[in-house]
Length: 137
Ligand SMILES: [Fe+2]
Ligand SMILES: [Fe+2]
Image 1 (tube, protein in one colour):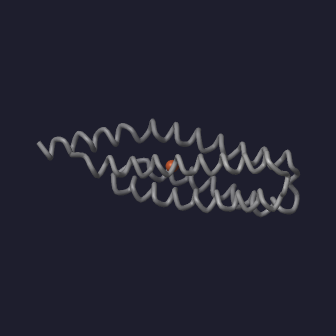
Image 2 (cartoon, rainbow, N blue to C red):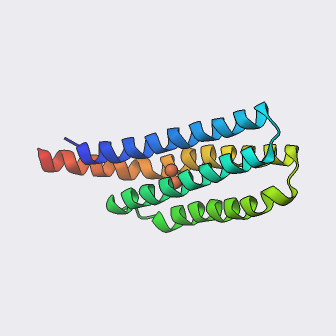
Image 3 (cartoon, rainbow, N blue to C red):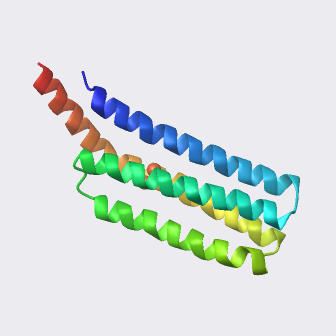
């Protein structure tokens, strides 16, 4: 019945699960060894995954007609800009404990962003579901 909406939210949810898994890998790597280069390459991979996810999510939200997309996009862009700046300085000046700070920053940002945006998006998804049900009936 509401296949399109269900598919869209499942894709977004699985994107979040993938990003959180990747961050867990990053934290585990940091716990396992102090190597700066290994951490930088793990962080670089996470940032690339996050960029892909943000683009796919914004496409879905645009298709669903989400009204607050500009604000949501601005949050994504803010994180990517920060991540790019951190990556640039990572190899030159961050010590081990600062790298922990970087990993925790991304973990907190992501869990907070997902929680708040899920609350903001839920009414839209409910409306879209109700519309699809009404159309199907
Ligand atoms: Fe997301
Ligand atoms: Fe998002």
